[in-house]
Amino acid sequence: METLRLYDFLPSGNGYKIRLLLTQIGMPFDRIEINILEGETRSPEFLSRNPNGKIPLLEIGENKYLAESNAILMYLSEGTEFLPYDRFLTAQVLQWLFFEQYSHEPFIATSRYWISILGKAEEYQEALKEKHERGYQALEVMENHLTEKTFFVGERYTIADIALFAYTHVADEGGFDLSRFKAILAWIERVKMQPGYIGINQG
Ligand SMILES: N[C@@H](CCC(=O)N[C@@H](CS)C(=O)NCC(=O)O)C(=O)O
Image (cartoon, rainbow, N blue to C red):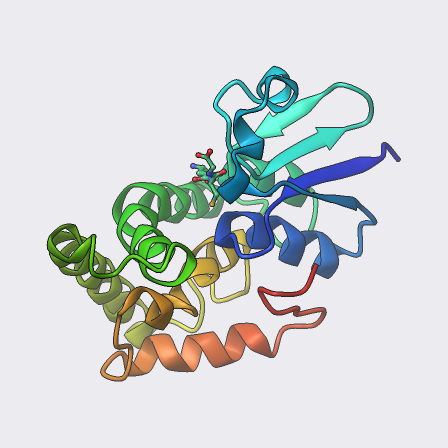
């Protein structure tokens, strides 16, 4: 099997998605900490690996690189229990991965980044209002879905759950109050019960 090297930043939910899946699959990997707060994603060396200057980045064997957390989830989960084989179910997984990137992460992850990682809640006060409004809209969509379902796709734990769990379970760090989202809270507990589960701060 090819060596896997994950360029990562421990507080990152996008990086955590990959750490969590690799651990649950039981695939060994080396983790390289890249301090995004020190500009390490913008060094010429890092940009030569990922011109978009972002972690997570997966190095597969020698000099083969894959960026974008949800693309990495797809790559790693193929042929495992974490990605359905059925064509329609696979497309539903993709549907939630795109939802996460377009309607969820830009609002919930960004709020957390400004408030809890940069510590700049005051400075971003105005912008946070819109982030919160849009983030709560995404949470409503998830809540409605999970009121009827135990997991996002096919009634079993897949990479769709991993992608959405990463920033939802720490949404409070972005100023979101999850207490009224009972179905989401129950789903968070179900995800935490999955074999091989690790927390976001575990490398
Ligand atoms: N859509 C990308 C987003 C990746 C992303 O935003 N990475 C952040 C950390 S969570 C980053 O590397 N920021 C550093 C930078 O932009 O220089 C994904 O899902 O992987």
